[in-house]
Length: 260
Image (tube, rainbow, N blue to C red; front, side):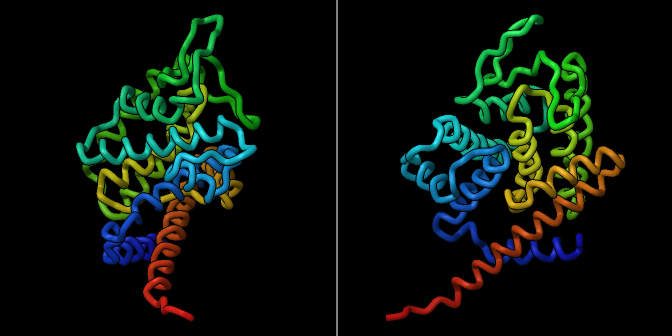
């Protein structure tokens, strides 16, 4: 699988799609749609594109969904800009990414232990339980994020070829399992996964919304078996799927002829 993925990356890069008008924009819009759809956003891919291109809302769809899409798109744009500066991981960096994701949909959360603002990327001060799973105690979050950043920074400049993709998968898996924020952990993890690829000048990847169940299963199975190769393989397969679709799409356009 990894040899095939390496070949697909090279073939994709040789197409020079970054020179195609609006390719990058439409690619990013698609990534945002799949990522927000995974989180339950009701907008279609066309509605997402129209919203981000023309600022036209979808009739009858929740305002919250529109704001989620806009925030995610802005967060991805910001991340691409940061990647050019080769910024290393830090709690502040991760908080900034989450703040971008939650900018218009987060807010102040009041707890017996104090208030925190999910729109500002504050670490949670509450216990989190999702789908029969408890995440680490909130008191452990700052230390765990510090350690997470330390490990990523030790590896980020040393990895090459397919180890870059594996590190991207590890970055996603570990952050989503720390679950440092009250909301937006999945979106933040997927963005940071792509940050690793951007850092190394590789194409972006997306996790397909139609593969959401397999995605969750891969996360759960990786934890249950304590085997990162499970999630790495899933991410590698998603990356291959995405690149193959983009390559095929480009080749089909090259064969276009006018019809009257």
